[in-house]
Image (cartoon, rainbow, N blue to C red):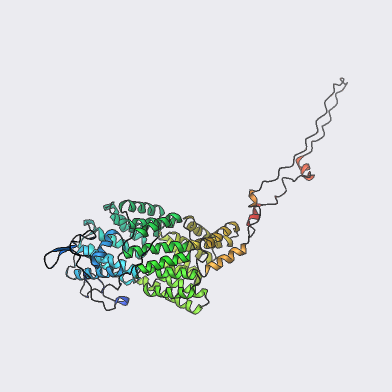
Length: 560
């Protein structure tokens, strides 16, 4: 695939709202930085004389110039952000910043404009998700609730309901996201924009059937790159690697806008990394960053791939850049484990402490980071605490493959391997090709002396991605080496049992001869008893007896 590098537009923080704006919360914490002046409808350029408006995406983009001639103009950042939302594609962070500034200024003088408040709240959600600044979620909630107060959802304000669904997904409250999304779906079953939030909600809840149906409906209602991207994610979750790769490549080929193209390239990088092809992964992540410098998730993806290539200095630098731009707890955990694998325990502890701080800060903003915290506790902290966190997730119907795998592993680490096996098996049964899931399942099976399946799953882990984790991948290889080669001849229960020894035939009774009638009839003698089966066993023939145990019993298949 020919990927033409493009320089993404500069990104910046969205402008802070005015203190008089009733639709947002006062600035605090990470959001208290003085705002840059908002840029509204800037970078306008006069088109060449006689150009047509074929590339204009928004209605009303044709305006009159000063001399009275009508000339097309290129859409500005606000229009580009609106066009991306209309198409179901991501906007660049700089365009998103301009959109937020535009809506903030508008609602200052129009505080009851429900559509503008809904747009502002949804833009806050997207900004927080892509910048990991969770303080914006509270502002999003305030704006969306203000929109519903001005115009209830029952009176046609489905945009605010969808914004609340997106907010719930971002906070990992998938049940709430499902409720908001399904409410909109009942009113507008043919509205394509409800299905992305439903797909995310169903996936987080582990409802694969509903997620599949929603993805199919979305593809029918909304053709193009967004549908291809969602379909590729569905294939990836089901373990259909070839289909996922083909669909993801088509999405990347057809993407035109920088943010959309970069997201598609990032997906290709993730697929390559999961296949155990770190060189290809680095190339795709680099292409994503060249296309849009604000595709910060590709910094973390690049760091993982570089660590797999043993380019640890570069990996450390990439992780640090990713955390600076996108401070997610998962990246702090990965960087800490990389430090630990290098024997830098002090640096690892520093990252683990940062992880706890990030999780605590996110919790204050309503974001549930229990999954990543439980993964940390299971391997580096308190496994019992991890079990409690994940049981709460399971009771809350968060039953994705990721939660099942983490709960199974935490139970094993807490000394409850038999219970953990059930959840680890559930994760593997989804079909997802994840080396970490296979490793966890194989280790649990080995602990329970189920050596045959343990060997198969450990082999799958190291074959799928030999460097899936700087800490766990070497342990997977060690566990596999300790099991050794399987015993020759296959499982014992599959061998043909020896035939039973034939029983000796009883001696025939002598034929009676006619006798003369005696004066007094004598009582006939009893015939000699036939040789019993017991006797035959006690005196076996040279062939094997059926009571003798087979030399290849089922227990032989469990020998390591």
